[in-house]
Image 1 (cartoon, helix red, strand yellow):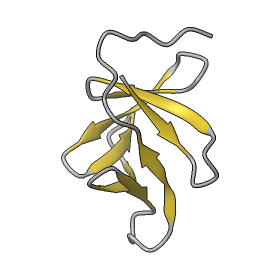
Image 2 (cartoon, helix red, strand yellow; image 1 turned 30 degrees about the vertical axis):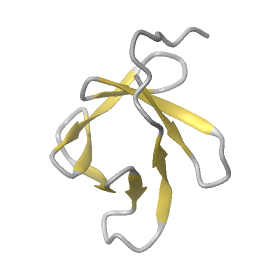
Image 3 (cartoon, helix red, strand yellow; image 1 turned 90 degrees about the vertical axis):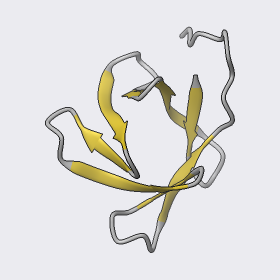
Image 4 (spheres, one colour; image 1 turned 120 degrees about the horizontal axis):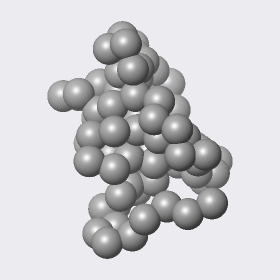
Length: 75
């Protein structure tokens, strides 16, 4: 599991494998190559390393935390 954290340090999602979830546990998209895409496959954000940015790459959306093996997300 990797958290998806805003530039202000607030977690607003998490990634398990390639699937992106909301904090409520609802799948919302997936990591596909260097993009986060929605459930329909439309690009939403661009990923550079651990950084997540708008599609044009100019504004940060947040970042992915380091992998935390063996952890599960519980609300």
